[in-house]
Length: 412
Ligand code: CS2
Ligand code: MG
Image (cartoon, rainbow, N blue to C red):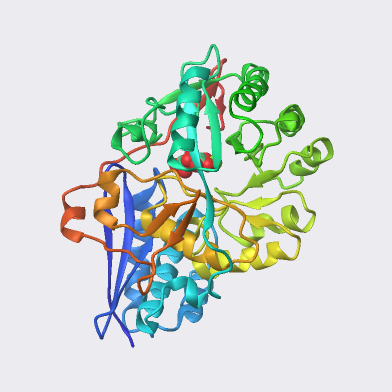
Protein backbone atom coordinates (compact mmCIF):
# COMPACT_ATOMS: atom_id res chain seq x y z
CA UNK A 1 0.00 0.00 0.00
CA UNK A 2 1.77 3.17 -1.19
CA UNK A 3 1.21 6.83 -0.38
CA UNK A 4 -0.40 8.33 -3.46
CA UNK A 5 -0.81 11.91 -2.28
CA UNK A 6 -0.55 14.13 0.79
CA UNK A 7 -2.44 17.41 1.20
CA UNK A 8 -1.83 20.16 3.76
CA UNK A 9 -5.08 21.87 4.76
CA UNK A 10 -4.92 25.10 6.77
CA UNK A 11 -8.34 26.03 8.14
CA UNK A 12 -9.60 28.39 10.79
CA UNK A 13 -12.99 27.35 12.30
CA UNK A 14 -12.70 29.54 15.40
CA UNK A 15 -8.88 29.34 15.37
CA UNK A 16 -6.11 28.21 13.01
CA UNK A 17 -5.33 24.51 12.44
CA UNK A 18 -2.87 22.68 10.16
CA UNK A 19 -4.14 19.29 8.98
CA UNK A 20 -2.23 16.73 6.90
CA UNK A 21 -4.35 14.35 4.81
CA UNK A 22 -2.51 11.30 3.41
CA UNK A 23 -4.23 9.16 0.76
CA UNK A 24 -2.97 5.72 -0.27
CA UNK A 25 -3.08 4.13 -3.73
CA UNK A 26 -6.06 2.05 -2.64
CA UNK A 27 -7.95 5.09 -1.36
CA UNK A 28 -7.41 4.82 2.41
CA UNK A 29 -7.17 8.27 4.01
CA UNK A 30 -5.37 9.20 7.23
CA UNK A 31 -5.27 12.53 9.09
CA UNK A 32 -2.55 14.17 11.18
CA UNK A 33 -2.37 17.43 13.18
CA UNK A 34 0.53 19.84 12.65
CA UNK A 35 -0.90 22.90 14.40
CA UNK A 36 1.60 25.25 16.08
CA UNK A 37 -0.30 28.20 17.55
CA UNK A 38 1.00 31.50 16.15
CA UNK A 39 3.46 29.84 13.72
CA UNK A 40 1.10 27.56 11.76
CA UNK A 41 2.34 28.49 8.26
CA UNK A 42 5.90 27.48 9.15
CA UNK A 43 4.68 23.91 9.69
CA UNK A 44 2.41 24.05 6.64
CA UNK A 45 5.39 25.08 4.49
CA UNK A 46 7.72 22.50 6.09
CA UNK A 47 5.20 19.85 5.12
CA UNK A 48 4.18 21.16 1.68
CA UNK A 49 7.59 22.26 0.44
CA UNK A 50 9.90 19.69 2.03
CA UNK A 51 8.07 16.62 3.36
CA UNK A 52 5.18 15.90 0.98
CA UNK A 53 7.51 15.38 -2.03
CA UNK A 54 9.31 12.69 0.02
CA UNK A 55 6.11 10.88 1.05
CA UNK A 56 4.58 10.14 -2.34
CA UNK A 57 5.43 6.58 -3.35
CA UNK A 58 6.52 5.45 0.14
CA UNK A 59 5.03 2.37 1.83
CA UNK A 60 2.19 3.74 3.96
CA UNK A 61 2.68 0.88 6.45
CA UNK A 62 6.33 1.79 7.10
CA UNK A 63 5.59 4.19 9.97
CA UNK A 64 8.85 3.75 11.89
CA UNK A 65 11.06 3.95 8.81
CA UNK A 66 9.21 7.09 7.68
CA UNK A 67 9.62 8.64 11.15
CA UNK A 68 13.37 7.95 11.20
CA UNK A 69 13.72 9.03 7.54
CA UNK A 70 12.12 12.42 8.28
CA UNK A 71 13.88 12.89 11.65
CA UNK A 72 17.44 11.88 10.68
CA UNK A 73 17.16 12.65 6.99
CA UNK A 74 16.51 16.37 7.57
CA UNK A 75 19.89 16.62 9.36
CA UNK A 76 18.52 19.66 11.26
CA UNK A 77 16.62 17.79 13.96
CA UNK A 78 14.19 18.53 16.80
CA UNK A 79 12.45 21.86 17.33
CA UNK A 80 8.73 22.72 17.35
CA UNK A 81 8.26 23.12 13.59
CA UNK A 82 10.11 19.95 12.56
CA UNK A 83 8.48 17.81 15.24
CA UNK A 84 4.97 19.13 14.53
CA UNK A 85 5.45 18.25 10.85
CA UNK A 86 6.75 14.77 11.69
CA UNK A 87 3.85 14.39 14.15
CA UNK A 88 1.32 15.10 11.41
CA UNK A 89 2.85 12.41 9.15
CA UNK A 90 3.18 9.85 11.96
CA UNK A 91 -0.39 10.33 13.18
CA UNK A 92 -1.86 10.14 9.66
CA UNK A 93 0.01 6.87 8.99
CA UNK A 94 -1.21 5.36 12.28
CA UNK A 95 -4.77 6.42 11.31
CA UNK A 96 -4.33 4.58 7.98
CA UNK A 97 -2.84 1.47 9.58
CA UNK A 98 -5.73 1.20 12.06
CA UNK A 99 -8.32 1.75 9.30
CA UNK A 100 -6.75 -1.03 7.21
CA UNK A 101 -6.78 -3.29 10.31
CA UNK A 102 -10.44 -2.36 10.91
CA UNK A 103 -9.68 -1.40 14.52
CA UNK A 104 -9.87 1.77 16.63
CA UNK A 105 -6.28 3.02 16.92
CA UNK A 106 -5.89 2.31 20.65
CA UNK A 107 -6.26 -1.42 19.86
CA UNK A 108 -3.04 -1.25 17.81
CA UNK A 109 -1.24 0.56 20.67
CA UNK A 110 -1.84 -2.22 23.19
CA UNK A 111 -5.60 -2.11 23.74
CA UNK A 112 -7.51 -0.53 26.62
CA UNK A 113 -5.66 -0.27 29.95
CA UNK A 114 -8.61 1.55 31.57
CA UNK A 115 -12.31 2.31 31.16
CA UNK A 116 -11.74 5.93 30.11
CA UNK A 117 -9.06 8.65 30.25
CA UNK A 118 -9.47 11.04 33.20
CA UNK A 119 -9.55 14.63 31.89
CA UNK A 120 -9.28 18.10 33.37
CA UNK A 121 -11.16 21.19 32.19
CA UNK A 122 -10.23 24.90 32.32
CA UNK A 123 -12.09 26.91 34.98
CA UNK A 124 -11.21 30.57 35.22
CA UNK A 125 -12.49 33.92 36.44
CA UNK A 126 -11.29 37.49 36.62
CA UNK A 127 -12.23 37.29 40.33
CA UNK A 128 -13.33 34.67 42.87
CA UNK A 129 -17.12 34.88 42.18
CA UNK A 130 -16.58 34.44 38.43
CA UNK A 131 -14.12 31.62 39.10
CA UNK A 132 -16.64 29.86 41.36
CA UNK A 133 -19.26 30.07 38.55
CA UNK A 134 -16.80 28.46 36.16
CA UNK A 135 -15.84 25.70 38.61
CA UNK A 136 -19.53 24.99 39.27
CA UNK A 137 -20.22 24.81 35.50
CA UNK A 138 -17.44 22.24 35.10
CA UNK A 139 -18.61 20.16 38.08
CA UNK A 140 -22.15 20.18 36.65
CA UNK A 141 -20.73 19.01 33.30
CA UNK A 142 -19.16 16.05 35.14
CA UNK A 143 -15.51 17.09 35.33
CA UNK A 144 -13.65 15.53 38.26
CA UNK A 145 -10.41 17.46 37.69
CA UNK A 146 -10.35 21.20 37.08
CA UNK A 147 -7.59 23.69 36.29
CA UNK A 148 -7.87 26.94 38.26
CA UNK A 149 -6.71 30.25 36.77
CA UNK A 150 -7.77 33.71 37.95
CA UNK A 151 -7.09 37.37 37.47
CA UNK A 152 -4.54 39.02 39.77
CA UNK A 153 -5.52 42.25 41.58
CA UNK A 154 -3.79 45.15 39.86
CA UNK A 155 -3.19 43.34 36.56
CA UNK A 156 -5.43 44.02 33.52
CA UNK A 157 -5.13 40.57 31.97
CA UNK A 158 -3.59 37.30 33.07
CA UNK A 159 -2.90 34.09 31.18
CA UNK A 160 -5.76 31.61 31.15
CA UNK A 161 -8.69 33.77 32.24
CA UNK A 162 -11.64 33.40 29.85
CA UNK A 163 -13.65 36.59 29.39
CA UNK A 164 -16.88 34.70 29.95
CA UNK A 165 -15.97 32.21 32.62
CA UNK A 166 -19.56 31.26 33.29
CA UNK A 167 -20.00 30.08 29.68
CA UNK A 168 -21.04 26.46 29.49
CA UNK A 169 -18.79 23.85 27.98
CA UNK A 170 -18.54 23.71 24.20
CA UNK A 171 -20.26 26.91 23.11
CA UNK A 172 -18.40 29.59 21.25
CA UNK A 173 -18.54 32.27 23.91
CA UNK A 174 -16.22 30.04 25.89
CA UNK A 175 -13.57 30.61 23.20
CA UNK A 176 -12.91 34.30 23.87
CA UNK A 177 -10.32 32.53 25.93
CA UNK A 178 -8.31 31.60 22.79
CA UNK A 179 -5.17 33.63 23.54
CA UNK A 180 -4.02 34.00 19.92
CA UNK A 181 -5.29 37.34 18.63
CA UNK A 182 -5.92 37.98 14.91
CA UNK A 183 -4.05 41.24 14.75
CA UNK A 184 -1.12 42.83 12.94
CA UNK A 185 1.01 42.60 16.09
CA UNK A 186 0.84 40.46 19.23
CA UNK A 187 -1.23 41.87 22.09
CA UNK A 188 0.99 43.01 24.95
CA UNK A 189 0.22 41.97 28.52
CA UNK A 190 1.68 43.25 31.77
CA UNK A 191 2.89 41.02 34.61
CA UNK A 192 3.79 41.33 38.29
CA UNK A 193 5.20 38.15 39.82
CA UNK A 194 5.04 39.37 43.43
CA UNK A 195 1.36 40.30 43.09
CA UNK A 196 0.71 36.86 41.58
CA UNK A 197 2.59 34.98 44.32
CA UNK A 198 0.71 36.93 47.00
CA UNK A 199 -2.66 36.17 45.39
CA UNK A 200 -2.63 32.53 44.24
CA UNK A 201 -2.63 30.78 47.66
CA UNK A 202 -5.74 32.73 48.69
CA UNK A 203 -7.49 31.57 45.50
CA UNK A 204 -6.90 27.89 46.28
CA UNK A 205 -7.90 28.41 49.93
CA UNK A 206 -11.19 29.89 48.67
CA UNK A 207 -11.76 27.09 46.12
CA UNK A 208 -11.07 24.33 48.65
CA UNK A 209 -13.33 26.11 51.14
CA UNK A 210 -16.18 26.32 48.62
CA UNK A 211 -15.82 22.99 46.78
CA UNK A 212 -14.12 20.69 49.31
CA UNK A 213 -11.20 18.31 49.11
CA UNK A 214 -12.34 15.71 46.54
CA UNK A 215 -12.12 17.59 43.23
CA UNK A 216 -8.62 17.39 41.70
CA UNK A 217 -7.25 20.92 41.25
CA UNK A 218 -4.49 21.94 38.85
CA UNK A 219 -2.76 25.24 38.14
CA UNK A 220 -0.57 26.52 35.32
CA UNK A 221 2.19 29.03 36.18
CA UNK A 222 2.96 29.27 32.46
CA UNK A 223 6.78 29.46 32.69
CA UNK A 224 6.73 32.78 34.57
CA UNK A 225 8.70 32.13 37.74
CA UNK A 226 12.36 31.86 38.67
CA UNK A 227 13.32 28.57 40.30
CA UNK A 228 13.16 29.98 43.83
CA UNK A 229 9.84 31.76 43.12
CA UNK A 230 8.54 28.42 41.77
CA UNK A 231 9.70 26.71 44.96
CA UNK A 232 7.91 29.35 47.01
CA UNK A 233 4.67 28.88 45.06
CA UNK A 234 4.83 25.09 45.29
CA UNK A 235 5.36 25.26 49.03
CA UNK A 236 2.56 27.82 49.55
CA UNK A 237 0.10 25.55 47.70
CA UNK A 238 0.89 22.34 49.63
CA UNK A 239 -2.07 22.81 52.04
CA UNK A 240 -4.44 22.69 49.02
CA UNK A 241 -3.25 19.32 47.73
CA UNK A 242 -2.96 20.12 44.00
CA UNK A 243 -3.03 17.35 41.42
CA UNK A 244 -0.21 19.30 39.74
CA UNK A 245 1.46 22.65 39.35
CA UNK A 246 2.39 23.17 35.70
CA UNK A 247 5.25 24.97 33.97
CA UNK A 248 6.45 26.59 37.19
CA UNK A 249 9.67 27.76 35.55
CA UNK A 250 11.17 27.65 32.04
CA UNK A 251 12.64 24.16 32.02
CA UNK A 252 15.10 24.32 29.17
CA UNK A 253 17.46 24.62 32.11
CA UNK A 254 16.51 21.23 33.52
CA UNK A 255 18.71 21.89 36.59
CA UNK A 256 16.25 24.55 37.73
CA UNK A 257 13.76 21.91 38.75
CA UNK A 258 16.20 20.57 41.34
CA UNK A 259 15.72 23.77 43.32
CA UNK A 260 11.99 23.51 43.08
CA UNK A 261 11.99 19.83 44.04
CA UNK A 262 14.10 20.54 47.15
CA UNK A 263 11.45 22.87 48.54
CA UNK A 264 8.06 21.42 47.71
CA UNK A 265 6.08 18.19 47.47
CA UNK A 266 3.49 19.74 45.14
CA UNK A 267 3.48 17.49 42.02
CA UNK A 268 5.07 19.11 38.94
CA UNK A 269 4.05 18.90 35.27
CA UNK A 270 6.21 20.24 32.46
CA UNK A 271 6.74 19.97 28.75
CA UNK A 272 3.99 21.38 26.53
CA UNK A 273 6.71 23.36 24.73
CA UNK A 274 9.09 20.36 24.63
CA UNK A 275 9.27 18.30 21.45
CA UNK A 276 11.61 15.39 22.10
CA UNK A 277 12.65 12.91 24.75
CA UNK A 278 15.97 14.76 25.11
CA UNK A 279 14.13 17.72 26.63
CA UNK A 280 13.14 15.41 29.50
CA UNK A 281 16.30 13.39 29.95
CA UNK A 282 17.36 14.77 33.35
CA UNK A 283 13.88 15.81 34.48
CA UNK A 284 12.68 12.20 34.30
CA UNK A 285 15.85 10.36 35.30
CA UNK A 286 16.28 12.54 38.42
CA UNK A 287 12.56 12.40 39.29
CA UNK A 288 12.32 16.19 39.00
CA UNK A 289 8.83 16.06 37.47
CA UNK A 290 5.74 13.90 37.91
CA UNK A 291 3.91 14.44 34.58
CA UNK A 292 5.01 14.74 30.94
CA UNK A 293 3.01 17.40 29.09
CA UNK A 294 4.13 16.93 25.45
CA UNK A 295 1.12 16.40 23.18
CA UNK A 296 1.22 14.07 20.16
CA UNK A 297 1.01 17.15 17.89
CA UNK A 298 4.16 18.93 19.10
CA UNK A 299 6.49 16.04 19.93
CA UNK A 300 6.81 13.99 16.77
CA UNK A 301 3.56 12.03 16.85
CA UNK A 302 2.30 8.82 18.45
CA UNK A 303 5.51 6.84 17.80
CA UNK A 304 7.61 9.54 19.47
CA UNK A 305 5.40 10.30 22.49
CA UNK A 306 5.09 6.56 23.09
CA UNK A 307 8.91 6.37 23.35
CA UNK A 308 8.96 9.30 25.79
CA UNK A 309 6.29 7.67 27.94
CA UNK A 310 8.10 4.30 27.97
CA UNK A 311 11.21 6.12 29.26
CA UNK A 312 9.05 7.96 31.80
CA UNK A 313 7.49 4.68 32.97
CA UNK A 314 10.89 3.52 34.24
CA UNK A 315 10.73 6.41 36.76
CA UNK A 316 7.01 6.29 37.62
CA UNK A 317 6.41 9.51 35.68
CA UNK A 318 2.98 9.71 34.06
CA UNK A 319 1.40 11.35 31.04
CA UNK A 320 -0.47 14.65 31.24
CA UNK A 321 -0.76 15.47 27.57
CA UNK A 322 -1.42 19.07 26.51
CA UNK A 323 -4.92 19.40 25.08
CA UNK A 324 -5.89 23.08 24.58
CA UNK A 325 -8.01 24.16 21.64
CA UNK A 326 -4.80 24.85 19.71
CA UNK A 327 -4.20 21.13 19.46
CA UNK A 328 -6.76 20.12 16.85
CA UNK A 329 -9.41 17.44 17.42
CA UNK A 330 -7.07 15.15 15.45
CA UNK A 331 -4.27 15.72 17.96
CA UNK A 332 -6.69 15.29 20.85
CA UNK A 333 -8.10 12.06 19.36
CA UNK A 334 -4.55 10.68 18.97
CA UNK A 335 -3.77 11.58 22.59
CA UNK A 336 -6.89 9.81 23.87
CA UNK A 337 -6.16 6.68 21.82
CA UNK A 338 -2.60 6.54 23.16
CA UNK A 339 -3.83 7.46 26.65
CA UNK A 340 -6.24 4.53 26.66
CA UNK A 341 -3.35 2.10 26.09
CA UNK A 342 -0.53 3.64 28.17
CA UNK A 343 0.00 1.98 31.54
CA UNK A 344 1.51 5.21 32.90
CA UNK A 345 -1.36 7.45 31.76
CA UNK A 346 -1.96 10.28 34.23
CA UNK A 347 -4.53 12.77 32.95
CA UNK A 348 -5.58 14.42 29.68
CA UNK A 349 -6.14 18.15 29.23
CA UNK A 350 -9.57 18.74 27.67
CA UNK A 351 -10.29 22.42 26.98
CA UNK A 352 -13.28 21.53 24.73
CA UNK A 353 -13.15 22.70 21.11
CA UNK A 354 -15.83 25.12 19.93
CA UNK A 355 -18.86 23.96 17.95
CA UNK A 356 -17.39 25.50 14.78
CA UNK A 357 -14.21 23.45 15.20
CA UNK A 358 -16.02 20.21 15.97
CA UNK A 359 -18.21 20.64 12.85
CA UNK A 360 -15.08 20.54 10.65
CA UNK A 361 -13.33 17.62 12.38
CA UNK A 362 -16.23 15.51 13.54
CA UNK A 363 -17.05 13.93 16.94
CA UNK A 364 -13.96 11.96 17.89
CA UNK A 365 -14.60 10.94 21.47
CA UNK A 366 -17.21 10.49 24.19
CA UNK A 367 -17.06 12.55 27.43
CA UNK A 368 -18.66 10.89 30.45
CA UNK A 369 -17.80 10.11 34.06
CA UNK A 370 -15.12 12.81 34.09
CA UNK A 371 -13.18 11.16 31.29
CA UNK A 372 -12.91 10.58 27.56
CA UNK A 373 -13.23 7.37 25.58
CA UNK A 374 -11.93 7.39 22.02
CA UNK A 375 -14.10 6.59 19.02
CA UNK A 376 -14.61 2.86 18.40
CA UNK A 377 -14.51 3.40 14.62
CA UNK A 378 -11.46 2.06 12.73
CA UNK A 379 -8.61 4.58 12.98
CA UNK A 380 -8.71 7.85 14.92
CA UNK A 381 -12.43 8.46 14.33
CA UNK A 382 -11.94 11.76 12.43
CA UNK A 383 -14.61 12.91 9.94
CA UNK A 384 -12.81 15.86 8.32
CA UNK A 385 -15.19 18.00 6.26
CA UNK A 386 -12.95 19.58 3.59
CA UNK A 387 -15.74 21.69 2.08
CA UNK A 388 -16.57 23.18 5.48
CA UNK A 389 -12.85 23.62 6.25
CA UNK A 390 -12.52 25.66 3.05
CA UNK A 391 -15.15 28.08 4.37
CA UNK A 392 -12.77 29.10 7.20
CA UNK A 393 -9.70 30.67 5.59
CA UNK A 394 -6.50 31.19 7.56
CA UNK A 395 -6.06 34.45 9.41
CA UNK A 396 -2.67 35.18 10.95
CA UNK A 397 -2.88 35.24 14.73
CA UNK A 398 -0.27 35.91 17.40
CA UNK A 399 0.01 34.75 20.97
CA UNK A 400 0.43 37.67 23.37
CA UNK A 401 3.79 39.08 24.42
CA UNK A 402 4.22 39.56 28.16
CA UNK A 403 6.16 42.37 29.82
CA UNK A 404 7.07 43.13 33.43
CA UNK A 405 5.90 46.39 34.93
CA UNK A 406 9.12 48.13 33.81
CA UNK A 407 8.57 46.99 30.21
CA UNK A 408 11.05 44.10 30.19
CA UNK A 409 9.86 41.23 28.01
CA UNK A 410 8.89 38.26 30.17
CA UNK A 411 7.62 34.72 29.52
CA UNK A 412 3.95 34.75 28.54
C1 CS2 B 1 -1.64 26.29 28.19
C2 CS2 B 1 -1.87 26.40 26.73
O1 CS2 B 1 -3.33 24.66 28.17
C3 CS2 B 1 -2.25 25.00 28.69
O2 CS2 B 1 -1.67 24.37 29.58
O3 CS2 B 1 -0.31 26.39 28.57
O4 CS2 B 1 -3.21 26.75 26.55
C4 CS2 B 1 -1.01 27.41 26.00
O5 CS2 B 1 -1.19 28.69 26.57
C5 CS2 B 1 -1.45 27.42 24.54
O6 CS2 B 1 -1.31 26.13 24.03
C6 CS2 B 1 -0.62 28.39 23.72
O7 CS2 B 1 -1.06 28.36 22.39
MG1 MG C 1 0.21 25.03 30.08
